[in-house]
Length: 64
Image (cartoon, rainbow, N blue to C red):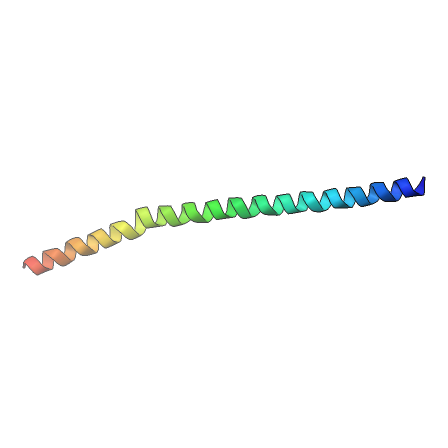
């Protein structure tokens, strides 16, 4: 009887470890997607417009 309880306890610990690893993998995946989305949006709506405005203004001053 005690062997069965020990085996059950070891199996539940192993399952908890597997579940923790899966949760960690999910969090890493979601974090990576969030970082990529932040990078893409920042590049598209902040850096490109600033670069285009700088290029436009530089060309305007050259034409003077």
